[in-house]
Length: 222
Image 1 (cartoon, rainbow, N blue to C red):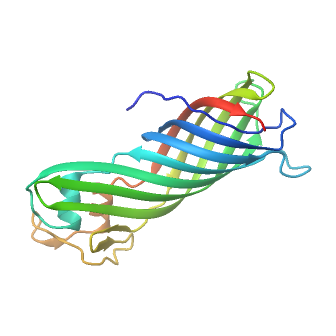
Image 2: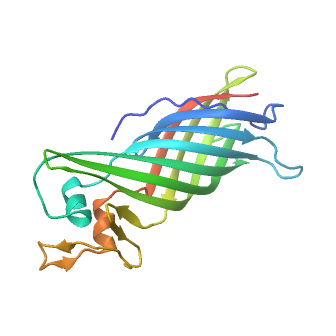
Image 3: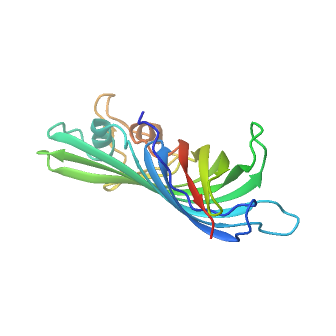
C-alpha cells in the first residue's frame, strides 16, 4: 500500500477559546484522500466535545477491468484496459474528549458517512469506455491526538475506519442491486450463460466498504 502522506487540518478544540474552524486534510484512506471540514467547538453546555462537518475526495482502485466489462457490457476481450476510481464522501463527526495513552487533547470521533463512488473503465482500441457508480451510507470511528505548536497551531495524528453498506451498482444500461432485483443483468459465458448476480458485480467493482485512514497534519484555530 502507499506510504503515509501528510495531512493538513484546520480545526477548533476544547483546549482553546476558538469556537469554530476550517479544515483541510490529506492522507491515506484506502488510497490517497483529501478532506475539507468545518468544526464547531463546545457544541452545548454540559455536552463536552465538538461537531465536525466534512467533504472528502479519494482516489482508489476501481476493481477488476476484464470482469467489469463482462458483468456490465459484454464478453469482448479486445482493447487494452485502463481503469481509475474516485469517491466523494460526506461526513459528520462527534468528537468526544478522551484520554488515549496518557496523551492530553485526544478525542474519539464517530458519526455517519455518505459516499458517491465512480469507477471508470476504458478499453483502448476496444471501443468501450464506461462508468460504474454507487451511492452508499456508512458509519465511521476513529481516534485523534493534538499536540500544541503555537496559540493557533496544533500537530495532529489521526487513525480511523469507515464502513459503507452495500448499495446498487450502476453501469452502462445495467444495474445490480443487493437484493438481486437486477436490470439487464449480463450472462456469464464461462458458467453456462447463467446471469451474473450482485455478488459477482460487487466482487468485481471495489466500491467503498472498509475504508481505513491514517492521517498526520496540523490544526489551525480561528
